Length: 86
Image 1 (cartoon, rainbow, N blue to C red):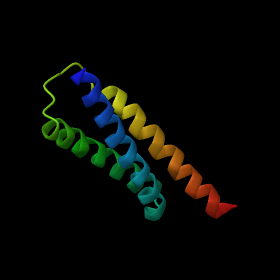
Image 2: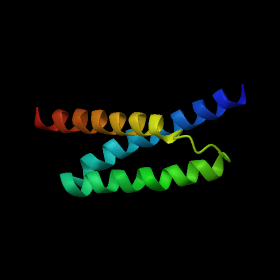
Image 3: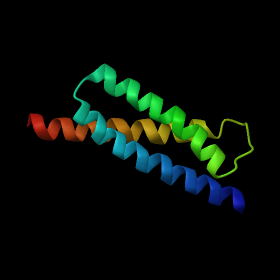
Image 4: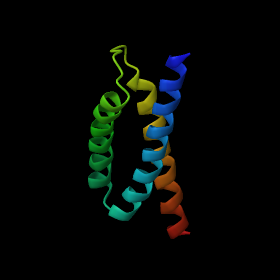
């Protein structure tokens, strides 16, 4: 049961940071810099969450979190971009 608690916590953290980074990427206004910033934040967040929640598994638990993070980042960035353009 503890596994689901850790997975839920990491999913929420990565989703929240993905949403925030989507807005930050919109504010940066340069596609390449925004993409690099999102990747750097993901890598740093990966190590912080792993250390913070004391995750010992090495079985690519972060791959699911990468999908959540990058999809939410892209969706939020697109929503803000289209809101200004329209």
